[in-house]
Image (cartoon, rainbow, N blue to C red; front, side):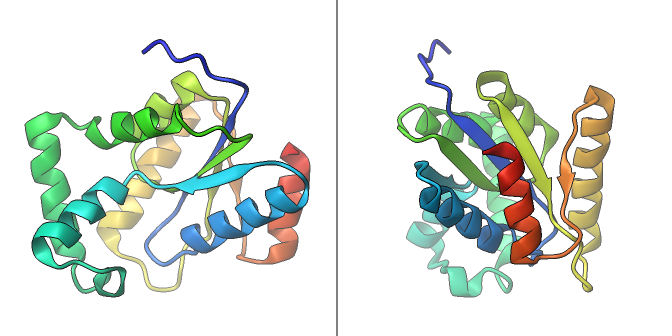
Length: 174
């Protein structure tokens, strides 16, 4: 891809289901804006959720009950179009965002990270693990963490979902 990207930085947030990824992304976006930076929150899963809504009446209210629907639909689409489908779809969207920071609130797989990190300076935040954890989701996040270790890539592990900790993180990158 031949993007002419300005120095947009990407913050990718990973963690298990219900760990506060989207909440943290919104908080970071708002904090960046208060500091005079432009920022947008985007998701790898947005196109998937749009298709599920169009054809299967999926809503965000249903996200826990209809998780299997999203998982199965994503698996089928990746089998048809390749596992990088959602990574390249989001990368295409990012090239049109004229912002200082892009915050991705749903990093799940190493290949998604690799696609984004190839084109943007990237920082990863790993959310604290919630008390109730889906085993498959936990293994997926552990595989991603193992991938960072192999790359010798540093990521930030938030210990708790507290505004002071997130502020401290933001001051480190702004």
